[in-house]
Image 1 (cartoon, rainbow, N blue to C red):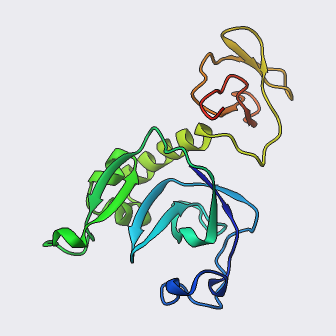
Image 2 (cartoon, rainbow, N blue to C red; image 1 turned 30 degrees about the vertical axis):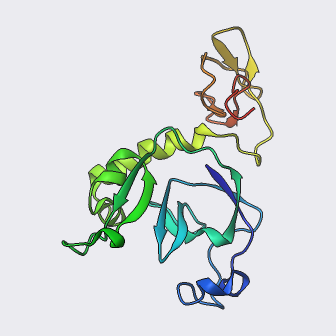
Length: 192
């Protein structure tokens, strides 16, 4: 799932959301930039996206969906659905549960995000693995370069001319193993 930033100041979003975001505070987002959504949840009766904003270095941040426009509505194949409770409470009524989409460990383990933001080694490594998978999953319109098809099994980097075995069409993007450049996968068909 990809979203494009439309607003980055609290007073630009709908009034029903005031109180959860400071009106004059600028959120670290770039208007017009697309962001990969690593998880999606409901908080305060609104949908929030977990993305890498412009300040993040080691973990994603929760940001209200009102700041974005959906540009690719395909759910990640790495996500599962769960009903989560606040990790600070032990006894929660059914109406206090919130919907959550994310990779299995995040969706099912209580306190996963808290441990991730605390820099716990297991959670950081797991998130990094899923982030790399989700970054390639859907086409990125900010990138114009496209890998070349060598034959039915190989792709070729248009920059360094390295070739690698990549017969799959599940991911919208590919990374050259030699120069590490990200480019479109010409075999991708899921979004067409």
